[in-house]
Length: 565
Image (tube, rainbow, N blue to C red):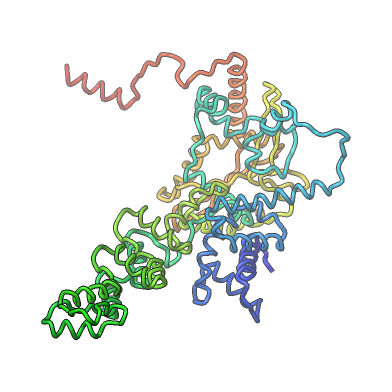
Protein backbone atom coordinates (compact mmCIF):
# COMPACT_ATOMS: atom_id res chain seq x y z
CA UNK A 1 0.00 0.00 0.00
CA UNK A 2 1.31 3.46 -0.92
CA UNK A 3 2.26 5.40 2.23
CA UNK A 4 3.47 8.70 0.75
CA UNK A 5 2.06 10.94 -1.93
CA UNK A 6 4.90 10.03 -4.30
CA UNK A 7 4.36 6.31 -3.79
CA UNK A 8 0.65 6.79 -4.46
CA UNK A 9 1.29 8.72 -7.68
CA UNK A 10 3.89 6.15 -8.82
CA UNK A 11 1.38 3.35 -8.28
CA UNK A 12 -1.34 5.27 -10.13
CA UNK A 13 0.98 6.02 -13.06
CA UNK A 14 1.95 2.34 -13.30
CA UNK A 15 -1.71 1.31 -13.26
CA UNK A 16 -2.54 3.92 -15.91
CA UNK A 17 0.24 2.66 -18.20
CA UNK A 18 -1.10 -0.88 -17.95
CA UNK A 19 -4.67 0.32 -18.53
CA UNK A 20 -3.72 2.42 -21.56
CA UNK A 21 -1.53 -0.28 -23.14
CA UNK A 22 -4.37 -2.83 -23.15
CA UNK A 23 -1.88 -5.68 -22.91
CA UNK A 24 -3.07 -8.93 -21.32
CA UNK A 25 -1.25 -9.67 -18.08
CA UNK A 26 -1.34 -12.82 -15.98
CA UNK A 27 0.30 -11.41 -12.85
CA UNK A 28 -0.99 -7.84 -12.54
CA UNK A 29 0.58 -7.29 -9.12
CA UNK A 30 4.07 -8.20 -10.37
CA UNK A 31 3.67 -6.12 -13.52
CA UNK A 32 2.64 -3.13 -11.41
CA UNK A 33 5.58 -3.61 -9.05
CA UNK A 34 8.00 -3.85 -11.99
CA UNK A 35 6.60 -0.67 -13.52
CA UNK A 36 6.88 1.22 -10.22
CA UNK A 37 10.51 0.12 -9.99
CA UNK A 38 11.05 1.38 -13.56
CA UNK A 39 9.48 4.72 -12.63
CA UNK A 40 11.99 5.01 -9.79
CA UNK A 41 15.02 4.37 -12.00
CA UNK A 42 15.39 0.56 -12.04
CA UNK A 43 16.45 -0.22 -15.64
CA UNK A 44 17.04 -3.96 -15.17
CA UNK A 45 13.83 -5.05 -16.92
CA UNK A 46 14.53 -4.29 -20.59
CA UNK A 47 10.99 -5.26 -21.60
CA UNK A 48 9.72 -2.10 -19.92
CA UNK A 49 12.05 0.23 -21.84
CA UNK A 50 9.21 1.02 -24.25
CA UNK A 51 7.43 2.87 -21.43
CA UNK A 52 10.32 5.21 -20.57
CA UNK A 53 9.05 8.01 -22.78
CA UNK A 54 5.61 7.86 -21.16
CA UNK A 55 7.10 7.73 -17.67
CA UNK A 56 9.17 10.87 -18.23
CA UNK A 57 6.64 12.91 -20.20
CA UNK A 58 3.57 12.08 -18.14
CA UNK A 59 5.41 11.76 -14.82
CA UNK A 60 6.56 15.39 -14.85
CA UNK A 61 2.98 16.64 -15.29
CA UNK A 62 1.54 14.17 -12.79
CA UNK A 63 3.92 14.93 -9.93
CA UNK A 64 3.58 18.70 -10.41
CA UNK A 65 -0.23 18.76 -10.53
CA UNK A 66 -1.80 19.20 -7.11
CA UNK A 67 -5.21 18.96 -8.78
CA UNK A 68 -4.49 15.46 -10.06
CA UNK A 69 -3.16 14.40 -6.68
CA UNK A 70 -6.40 15.52 -5.04
CA UNK A 71 -8.49 13.12 -7.13
CA UNK A 72 -9.44 9.64 -5.89
CA UNK A 73 -7.13 6.90 -7.16
CA UNK A 74 -9.65 5.54 -9.68
CA UNK A 75 -10.20 8.96 -11.28
CA UNK A 76 -6.48 9.71 -11.14
CA UNK A 77 -5.66 6.48 -13.01
CA UNK A 78 -8.35 7.16 -15.63
CA UNK A 79 -7.02 10.69 -16.16
CA UNK A 80 -3.44 9.47 -16.59
CA UNK A 81 -4.54 6.70 -18.95
CA UNK A 82 -6.45 9.24 -21.05
CA UNK A 83 -3.31 11.37 -21.37
CA UNK A 84 -1.21 8.32 -22.31
CA UNK A 85 -3.69 7.30 -25.04
CA UNK A 86 -3.72 10.85 -26.44
CA UNK A 87 -0.11 11.99 -26.17
CA UNK A 88 -0.37 13.87 -29.47
CA UNK A 89 -3.31 15.85 -28.10
CA UNK A 90 -1.40 16.87 -24.95
CA UNK A 91 2.22 17.36 -26.16
CA UNK A 92 3.38 19.85 -23.52
CA UNK A 93 3.46 19.53 -19.74
CA UNK A 94 1.19 22.58 -19.49
CA UNK A 95 -1.39 20.88 -21.75
CA UNK A 96 -1.48 17.82 -19.50
CA UNK A 97 -1.76 19.92 -16.33
CA UNK A 98 -4.56 21.98 -17.86
CA UNK A 99 -6.48 18.76 -18.52
CA UNK A 100 -5.94 17.62 -14.93
CA UNK A 101 -7.16 20.98 -13.64
CA UNK A 102 -10.31 20.70 -15.76
CA UNK A 103 -11.09 17.42 -14.01
CA UNK A 104 -10.66 19.03 -10.59
CA UNK A 105 -12.93 21.90 -11.57
CA UNK A 106 -15.57 19.42 -12.71
CA UNK A 107 -15.24 17.47 -9.45
CA UNK A 108 -15.48 20.63 -7.33
CA UNK A 109 -18.45 21.88 -9.34
CA UNK A 110 -20.24 18.56 -8.96
CA UNK A 111 -19.54 18.48 -5.23
CA UNK A 112 -20.84 22.00 -4.83
CA UNK A 113 -24.04 21.07 -6.63
CA UNK A 114 -24.59 18.03 -4.41
CA UNK A 115 -23.61 19.72 -1.13
CA UNK A 116 -26.37 20.95 1.12
CA UNK A 117 -25.96 24.69 0.99
CA UNK A 118 -28.19 27.71 1.26
CA UNK A 119 -30.33 28.01 -1.87
CA UNK A 120 -30.88 31.51 -3.18
CA UNK A 121 -34.19 32.24 -4.80
CA UNK A 122 -32.68 34.75 -7.24
CA UNK A 123 -29.85 34.26 -9.69
CA UNK A 124 -26.51 35.19 -8.19
CA UNK A 125 -24.73 37.98 -10.05
CA UNK A 126 -21.13 38.95 -9.27
CA UNK A 127 -20.99 42.67 -8.60
CA UNK A 128 -18.04 45.05 -8.95
CA UNK A 129 -17.53 44.80 -5.18
CA UNK A 130 -17.41 41.01 -5.45
CA UNK A 131 -14.77 41.24 -8.19
CA UNK A 132 -12.71 43.65 -6.09
CA UNK A 133 -12.95 41.35 -3.07
CA UNK A 134 -11.82 38.40 -5.16
CA UNK A 135 -8.60 40.22 -6.11
CA UNK A 136 -7.79 41.59 -2.65
CA UNK A 137 -5.23 39.75 -0.50
CA UNK A 138 -6.63 37.45 2.20
CA UNK A 139 -7.33 39.11 5.55
CA UNK A 140 -7.17 37.44 8.96
CA UNK A 141 -8.35 38.76 12.30
CA UNK A 142 -6.01 38.54 15.31
CA UNK A 143 -5.60 34.96 16.41
CA UNK A 144 -3.92 31.61 15.83
CA UNK A 145 -4.32 29.87 12.45
CA UNK A 146 -2.70 26.42 12.15
CA UNK A 147 -3.61 25.48 8.58
CA UNK A 148 -2.91 28.50 6.38
CA UNK A 149 -0.92 27.58 3.23
CA UNK A 150 2.46 29.25 2.97
CA UNK A 151 1.56 31.27 -0.14
CA UNK A 152 -1.66 32.51 1.52
CA UNK A 153 0.23 33.60 4.62
CA UNK A 154 2.78 35.60 2.62
CA UNK A 155 0.00 37.33 0.64
CA UNK A 156 -2.11 38.19 3.69
CA UNK A 157 -2.47 41.27 5.87
CA UNK A 158 -0.01 42.37 8.52
CA UNK A 159 3.68 43.24 8.69
CA UNK A 160 5.82 40.16 9.15
CA UNK A 161 9.24 40.05 10.77
CA UNK A 162 10.82 39.70 7.32
CA UNK A 163 9.04 42.85 6.14
CA UNK A 164 10.11 44.66 9.30
CA UNK A 165 13.73 43.74 8.60
CA UNK A 166 13.35 45.38 5.19
CA UNK A 167 12.24 48.56 6.97
CA UNK A 168 15.44 48.36 9.04
CA UNK A 169 17.39 48.52 5.77
CA UNK A 170 15.57 51.78 5.12
CA UNK A 171 11.99 52.97 4.99
CA UNK A 172 12.48 53.75 1.30
CA UNK A 173 13.44 50.14 0.67
CA UNK A 174 10.41 48.92 2.64
CA UNK A 175 8.05 51.20 0.72
CA UNK A 176 9.39 50.18 -2.69
CA UNK A 177 9.56 46.52 -1.77
CA UNK A 178 6.17 46.10 -0.08
CA UNK A 179 3.94 49.05 -1.02
CA UNK A 180 4.74 50.14 -4.56
CA UNK A 181 6.41 46.74 -5.18
CA UNK A 182 8.89 48.15 -7.69
CA UNK A 183 11.60 46.11 -5.97
CA UNK A 184 10.84 42.45 -6.56
CA UNK A 185 11.88 39.63 -4.31
CA UNK A 186 14.53 37.66 -6.13
CA UNK A 187 14.44 33.91 -5.91
CA UNK A 188 17.87 32.67 -4.93
CA UNK A 189 19.54 29.30 -4.53
CA UNK A 190 20.12 30.08 -0.85
CA UNK A 191 16.42 30.78 -0.22
CA UNK A 192 15.39 27.65 -2.11
CA UNK A 193 17.83 25.55 -0.09
CA UNK A 194 16.55 27.08 3.13
CA UNK A 195 13.01 26.07 2.18
CA UNK A 196 14.22 22.58 1.31
CA UNK A 197 16.03 22.23 4.65
CA UNK A 198 12.96 23.37 6.61
CA UNK A 199 10.74 20.90 4.77
CA UNK A 200 13.14 17.97 5.20
CA UNK A 201 13.39 18.51 8.94
CA UNK A 202 9.90 19.67 9.89
CA UNK A 203 7.55 18.43 7.15
CA UNK A 204 9.35 15.72 5.13
CA UNK A 205 6.03 14.35 3.89
CA UNK A 206 5.66 17.51 1.74
CA UNK A 207 8.98 17.06 -0.07
CA UNK A 208 7.61 15.59 -3.30
CA UNK A 209 4.72 18.04 -3.50
CA UNK A 210 6.84 21.16 -3.00
CA UNK A 211 10.21 20.37 -4.64
CA UNK A 212 11.28 18.87 -7.94
CA UNK A 213 14.59 17.38 -9.00
CA UNK A 214 15.89 17.67 -12.56
CA UNK A 215 14.35 14.96 -14.76
CA UNK A 216 16.37 11.80 -15.30
CA UNK A 217 17.45 11.92 -18.93
CA UNK A 218 16.77 8.57 -20.69
CA UNK A 219 19.77 6.86 -22.24
CA UNK A 220 18.26 7.21 -25.72
CA UNK A 221 17.41 10.90 -25.34
CA UNK A 222 18.79 13.21 -28.00
CA UNK A 223 21.15 15.65 -26.32
CA UNK A 224 23.12 17.47 -29.03
CA UNK A 225 23.52 17.80 -32.79
CA UNK A 226 25.80 14.76 -32.98
CA UNK A 227 23.22 12.49 -31.35
CA UNK A 228 20.51 13.94 -33.58
CA UNK A 229 22.57 13.36 -36.72
CA UNK A 230 23.19 9.75 -35.66
CA UNK A 231 19.45 9.32 -35.09
CA UNK A 232 18.72 10.67 -38.57
CA UNK A 233 21.37 8.43 -40.13
CA UNK A 234 19.84 5.42 -38.40
CA UNK A 235 16.38 6.50 -39.55
CA UNK A 236 17.56 6.95 -43.13
CA UNK A 237 19.22 3.53 -43.09
CA UNK A 238 15.89 1.92 -42.27
CA UNK A 239 14.00 3.57 -45.11
CA UNK A 240 13.06 1.69 -48.26
CA UNK A 241 15.63 2.89 -50.81
CA UNK A 242 14.42 5.31 -53.45
CA UNK A 243 15.21 4.22 -57.02
CA UNK A 244 17.89 6.26 -58.74
CA UNK A 245 17.41 7.90 -62.13
CA UNK A 246 19.49 5.18 -63.76
CA UNK A 247 17.27 2.51 -62.22
CA UNK A 248 14.15 4.31 -63.41
CA UNK A 249 15.63 4.55 -66.91
CA UNK A 250 16.38 0.82 -66.83
CA UNK A 251 12.71 0.12 -66.04
CA UNK A 252 11.66 2.21 -69.03
CA UNK A 253 14.22 0.58 -71.30
CA UNK A 254 13.06 -2.89 -70.20
CA UNK A 255 9.53 -1.90 -71.16
CA UNK A 256 10.69 -0.50 -74.49
CA UNK A 257 12.50 -3.77 -75.23
CA UNK A 258 9.17 -5.62 -75.17
CA UNK A 259 7.67 -3.39 -77.86
CA UNK A 260 7.51 -4.61 -81.51
CA UNK A 261 10.29 -3.04 -83.56
CA UNK A 262 9.47 -0.96 -86.69
CA UNK A 263 10.23 -2.66 -90.00
CA UNK A 264 13.27 -1.33 -91.78
CA UNK A 265 12.74 0.93 -94.79
CA UNK A 266 16.23 0.36 -96.07
CA UNK A 267 17.35 -2.53 -98.22
CA UNK A 268 17.09 -3.59 -101.84
CA UNK A 269 13.89 -4.15 -103.78
CA UNK A 270 13.81 -7.86 -102.93
CA UNK A 271 14.13 -7.18 -99.14
CA UNK A 272 11.47 -4.47 -99.30
CA UNK A 273 9.22 -6.89 -101.16
CA UNK A 274 9.67 -9.57 -98.49
CA UNK A 275 8.76 -7.08 -95.77
CA UNK A 276 5.71 -5.94 -97.73
CA UNK A 277 4.51 -9.52 -98.12
CA UNK A 278 4.83 -10.00 -94.30
CA UNK A 279 2.52 -7.08 -93.59
CA UNK A 280 -1.01 -7.75 -92.30
CA UNK A 281 -3.60 -7.75 -95.07
CA UNK A 282 -4.90 -4.35 -94.00
CA UNK A 283 -1.56 -2.76 -94.89
CA UNK A 284 -0.94 -4.56 -98.24
CA UNK A 285 -2.99 -2.02 -100.15
CA UNK A 286 -1.24 -2.08 -103.57
CA UNK A 287 -3.62 -3.62 -106.16
CA UNK A 288 -2.36 -6.89 -107.61
CA UNK A 289 -2.58 -5.61 -111.16
CA UNK A 290 -0.37 -2.62 -110.41
CA UNK A 291 3.35 -2.66 -110.34
CA UNK A 292 4.77 -3.15 -106.86
CA UNK A 293 7.41 -0.47 -106.83
CA UNK A 294 9.81 -0.10 -103.90
CA UNK A 295 8.42 3.35 -103.14
CA UNK A 296 4.84 2.09 -103.00
CA UNK A 297 5.77 -0.83 -100.77
CA UNK A 298 7.80 1.46 -98.44
CA UNK A 299 4.75 3.69 -98.09
CA UNK A 300 2.71 0.70 -96.91
CA UNK A 301 5.46 -0.38 -94.51
CA UNK A 302 5.69 3.16 -93.14
CA UNK A 303 1.93 3.22 -92.54
CA UNK A 304 2.26 -0.05 -90.63
CA UNK A 305 5.19 1.29 -88.58
CA UNK A 306 3.11 4.32 -87.59
CA UNK A 307 0.63 2.04 -85.85
CA UNK A 308 3.25 0.49 -83.59
CA UNK A 309 3.53 1.74 -79.93
CA UNK A 310 6.14 4.47 -79.52
CA UNK A 311 9.02 3.69 -77.09
CA UNK A 312 8.89 5.76 -73.88
CA UNK A 313 11.38 8.56 -73.37
CA UNK A 314 14.30 7.98 -71.02
CA UNK A 315 15.41 11.61 -70.79
CA UNK A 316 14.70 14.21 -68.09
CA UNK A 317 14.89 14.33 -64.32
CA UNK A 318 13.36 12.07 -61.68
CA UNK A 319 9.95 13.70 -61.98
CA UNK A 320 9.93 13.26 -65.76
CA UNK A 321 10.95 9.61 -65.51
CA UNK A 322 8.25 8.84 -62.91
CA UNK A 323 5.66 10.58 -65.05
CA UNK A 324 6.73 8.44 -68.02
CA UNK A 325 6.60 5.22 -66.00
CA UNK A 326 3.16 6.14 -64.70
CA UNK A 327 1.78 5.49 -68.18
CA UNK A 328 2.64 1.81 -67.96
CA UNK A 329 2.73 1.01 -64.22
CA UNK A 330 0.86 3.55 -62.06
CA UNK A 331 0.97 1.30 -58.96
CA UNK A 332 4.74 1.09 -59.14
CA UNK A 333 5.03 4.86 -59.46
CA UNK A 334 2.59 5.47 -56.57
CA UNK A 335 4.63 3.19 -54.30
CA UNK A 336 7.84 4.95 -55.33
CA UNK A 337 6.38 8.38 -54.68
CA UNK A 338 5.12 7.31 -51.24
CA UNK A 339 8.57 6.33 -50.09
CA UNK A 340 9.72 8.93 -47.50
CA UNK A 341 12.66 10.99 -48.54
CA UNK A 342 15.82 10.59 -46.44
CA UNK A 343 16.24 13.37 -43.88
CA UNK A 344 19.03 15.88 -44.33
CA UNK A 345 21.70 15.62 -41.63
CA UNK A 346 23.06 19.15 -42.02
CA UNK A 347 21.75 22.34 -40.48
CA UNK A 348 21.21 23.95 -37.09
CA UNK A 349 20.06 22.12 -33.99
CA UNK A 350 16.56 23.57 -34.35
CA UNK A 351 16.36 22.29 -37.94
CA UNK A 352 17.38 18.77 -36.90
CA UNK A 353 14.79 18.75 -34.10
CA UNK A 354 12.04 19.84 -36.50
CA UNK A 355 12.95 17.11 -39.01
CA UNK A 356 13.01 14.40 -36.36
CA UNK A 357 9.68 15.52 -34.89
CA UNK A 358 8.13 15.45 -38.36
CA UNK A 359 8.72 11.70 -38.60
CA UNK A 360 8.68 10.54 -34.96
CA UNK A 361 6.50 11.49 -32.00
CA UNK A 362 8.44 9.17 -29.69
CA UNK A 363 11.82 10.88 -29.93
CA UNK A 364 12.89 12.31 -26.57
CA UNK A 365 14.94 15.52 -26.49
CA UNK A 366 16.96 16.23 -23.36
CA UNK A 367 16.57 19.98 -23.84
CA UNK A 368 12.79 19.70 -23.87
CA UNK A 369 12.75 17.64 -20.68
CA UNK A 370 14.90 20.26 -18.97
CA UNK A 371 12.82 23.13 -20.38
CA UNK A 372 9.62 21.51 -19.12
CA UNK A 373 11.20 21.12 -15.68
CA UNK A 374 12.43 24.71 -15.63
CA UNK A 375 9.07 26.05 -16.82
CA UNK A 376 7.19 24.29 -14.03
CA UNK A 377 6.66 26.96 -11.37
CA UNK A 378 4.37 24.83 -9.21
CA UNK A 379 7.32 23.44 -7.23
CA UNK A 380 10.74 24.69 -6.17
CA UNK A 381 13.50 23.34 -8.41
CA UNK A 382 16.44 21.80 -6.58
CA UNK A 383 19.53 19.88 -7.62
CA UNK A 384 20.62 16.43 -6.56
CA UNK A 385 23.53 17.95 -4.63
CA UNK A 386 21.17 20.23 -2.71
CA UNK A 387 18.95 17.30 -1.79
CA UNK A 388 21.96 15.26 -0.68
CA UNK A 389 23.22 18.09 1.53
CA UNK A 390 19.74 18.76 2.89
CA UNK A 391 19.29 15.12 3.87
CA UNK A 392 22.69 15.08 5.57
CA UNK A 393 21.66 18.13 7.61
CA UNK A 394 18.29 16.52 8.32
CA UNK A 395 20.07 13.45 9.67
CA UNK A 396 22.28 15.64 11.86
CA UNK A 397 19.19 17.24 13.39
CA UNK A 398 17.40 13.92 13.87
CA UNK A 399 20.44 12.40 15.58
CA UNK A 400 20.88 15.29 18.03
CA UNK A 401 19.90 14.05 21.51
CA UNK A 402 18.20 17.32 22.53
CA UNK A 403 16.34 17.96 19.30
CA UNK A 404 15.10 14.48 18.42
CA UNK A 405 12.50 14.48 21.23
CA UNK A 406 11.31 17.93 20.13
CA UNK A 407 10.75 16.87 16.51
CA UNK A 408 8.53 14.02 17.71
CA UNK A 409 6.94 15.87 20.64
CA UNK A 410 3.16 15.25 20.91
CA UNK A 411 2.58 18.94 21.61
CA UNK A 412 4.46 20.22 18.59
CA UNK A 413 3.02 22.34 15.77
CA UNK A 414 4.74 23.44 12.57
CA UNK A 415 4.33 26.67 10.59
CA UNK A 416 1.40 28.02 12.62
CA UNK A 417 0.38 31.56 11.64
CA UNK A 418 -0.38 34.24 14.22
CA UNK A 419 -2.01 37.61 13.56
CA UNK A 420 -2.14 40.55 15.95
CA UNK A 421 -2.22 44.33 16.28
CA UNK A 422 0.67 46.34 17.72
CA UNK A 423 -0.72 48.28 20.68
CA UNK A 424 1.58 51.29 20.21
CA UNK A 425 0.91 51.94 16.53
CA UNK A 426 -2.26 50.04 15.64
CA UNK A 427 -0.37 48.30 12.81
CA UNK A 428 -1.41 44.76 11.93
CA UNK A 429 1.42 42.27 12.43
CA UNK A 430 1.90 38.56 11.78
CA UNK A 431 4.45 35.84 12.55
CA UNK A 432 4.93 32.20 11.59
CA UNK A 433 7.44 30.31 13.81
CA UNK A 434 9.02 27.24 12.27
CA UNK A 435 8.19 25.05 15.26
CA UNK A 436 6.34 25.49 18.53
CA UNK A 437 5.88 23.12 21.44
CA UNK A 438 3.18 23.49 24.06
CA UNK A 439 3.54 21.82 27.44
CA UNK A 440 1.40 22.03 30.53
CA UNK A 441 3.24 25.08 31.83
CA UNK A 442 4.99 26.78 28.88
CA UNK A 443 5.06 27.48 25.16
CA UNK A 444 8.42 27.26 23.40
CA UNK A 445 9.27 28.49 19.91
CA UNK A 446 12.04 27.32 17.57
CA UNK A 447 13.53 28.57 14.31
CA UNK A 448 15.67 26.38 12.10
CA UNK A 449 18.74 28.10 10.62
CA UNK A 450 21.49 26.91 8.29
CA UNK A 451 24.95 28.49 8.58
CA UNK A 452 28.36 28.02 7.02
CA UNK A 453 30.92 28.22 9.82
CA UNK A 454 33.00 25.19 8.95
CA UNK A 455 36.43 26.83 9.01
CA UNK A 456 36.11 28.73 12.27
CA UNK A 457 37.87 27.50 15.39
CA UNK A 458 35.75 25.94 18.09
CA UNK A 459 36.36 28.81 20.51
CA UNK A 460 35.06 31.31 17.95
CA UNK A 461 31.78 29.54 17.13
CA UNK A 462 29.73 31.19 19.89
CA UNK A 463 30.88 34.65 18.80
CA UNK A 464 30.14 33.86 15.16
CA UNK A 465 26.64 32.63 15.99
CA UNK A 466 26.03 35.79 18.04
CA UNK A 467 27.17 37.88 15.06
CA UNK A 468 24.92 35.83 12.75
CA UNK A 469 21.92 36.48 15.01
CA UNK A 470 22.53 40.22 15.32
CA UNK A 471 23.58 40.87 11.71
CA UNK A 472 20.54 39.07 10.32
CA UNK A 473 18.10 40.44 12.93
CA UNK A 474 17.16 36.97 14.09
CA UNK A 475 16.63 38.41 17.59
CA UNK A 476 14.12 40.89 16.16
CA UNK A 477 12.09 38.05 14.65
CA UNK A 478 12.34 36.06 17.88
CA UNK A 479 10.94 38.96 19.90
CA UNK A 480 8.01 39.37 17.51
CA UNK A 481 7.36 35.62 17.69
CA UNK A 482 7.34 35.67 21.49
CA UNK A 483 5.04 38.71 21.71
CA UNK A 484 2.53 37.86 18.98
CA UNK A 485 2.49 34.06 19.40
CA UNK A 486 2.74 34.39 23.21
CA UNK A 487 5.82 32.18 23.54
CA UNK A 488 7.61 31.85 26.88
CA UNK A 489 11.00 30.82 25.48
CA UNK A 490 12.68 30.89 22.11
CA UNK A 491 15.48 28.78 20.64
CA UNK A 492 17.36 28.63 17.36
CA UNK A 493 18.54 25.34 15.91
CA UNK A 494 21.67 26.19 13.91
CA UNK A 495 22.94 23.50 11.51
CA UNK A 496 26.26 23.89 9.72
CA UNK A 497 25.86 23.25 5.99
CA UNK A 498 29.48 22.73 4.95
CA UNK A 499 29.74 19.42 3.12
CA UNK A 500 30.43 16.42 5.38
CA UNK A 501 30.63 18.69 8.44
CA UNK A 502 27.04 19.07 9.61
CA UNK A 503 27.09 19.88 13.31
CA UNK A 504 24.15 21.26 15.30
CA UNK A 505 23.99 24.05 17.88
CA UNK A 506 20.92 24.70 20.02
CA UNK A 507 20.88 28.39 21.02
CA UNK A 508 18.46 29.99 23.46
CA UNK A 509 17.51 33.65 23.11
CA UNK A 510 18.37 35.29 26.43
CA UNK A 511 15.94 37.75 28.06
CA UNK A 512 18.32 40.62 27.27
CA UNK A 513 18.60 39.56 23.62
CA UNK A 514 14.81 39.35 23.34
CA UNK A 515 14.43 42.74 24.99
CA UNK A 516 16.88 44.26 22.50
CA UNK A 517 14.94 42.74 19.62
CA UNK A 518 11.66 43.94 21.13
CA UNK A 519 12.85 47.54 21.44
CA UNK A 520 14.22 47.45 17.89
CA UNK A 521 11.08 46.06 16.29
CA UNK A 522 8.87 48.44 18.28
CA UNK A 523 10.95 51.42 17.12
CA UNK A 524 10.78 50.20 13.53
CA UNK A 525 6.99 49.87 13.73
CA UNK A 526 6.80 53.46 15.03
CA UNK A 527 8.97 54.58 12.10
CA UNK A 528 6.68 52.76 9.66
CA UNK A 529 3.62 54.34 11.32
CA UNK A 530 5.11 57.82 10.93
CA UNK A 531 6.02 57.16 7.30
CA UNK A 532 2.51 55.89 6.60
CA UNK A 533 0.99 59.00 8.21
CA UNK A 534 3.29 61.49 6.46
CA UNK A 535 3.92 59.54 3.25
CA UNK A 536 7.63 60.29 3.70
CA UNK A 537 9.82 57.23 3.21
CA UNK A 538 13.45 58.31 3.74
CA UNK A 539 16.44 56.43 2.38
CA UNK A 540 19.27 55.08 4.52
CA UNK A 541 21.18 58.41 4.51
CA UNK A 542 19.22 61.45 5.71
CA UNK A 543 21.98 63.88 6.76
CA UNK A 544 25.27 65.13 5.36
CA UNK A 545 28.00 62.70 6.33
CA UNK A 546 31.40 63.71 7.67
CA UNK A 547 33.80 60.81 7.31
CA UNK A 548 36.33 60.69 10.15
CA UNK A 549 39.23 58.34 10.83
CA UNK A 550 39.25 55.21 12.92
CA UNK A 551 42.14 54.57 15.34
CA UNK A 552 44.25 52.72 12.79
CA UNK A 553 43.91 55.42 10.17
CA UNK A 554 44.54 58.12 12.80
CA UNK A 555 47.83 56.47 13.73
CA UNK A 556 48.80 56.34 10.06
CA UNK A 557 48.00 60.04 9.78
CA UNK A 558 50.10 60.90 12.83
CA UNK A 559 53.00 58.80 11.56
CA UNK A 560 52.94 60.52 8.19
CA UNK A 561 52.71 63.94 9.83
CA UNK A 562 55.78 63.19 11.97
CA UNK A 563 57.74 62.02 8.93
CA UNK A 564 56.69 65.11 7.02
CA UNK A 565 58.00 67.40 9.74
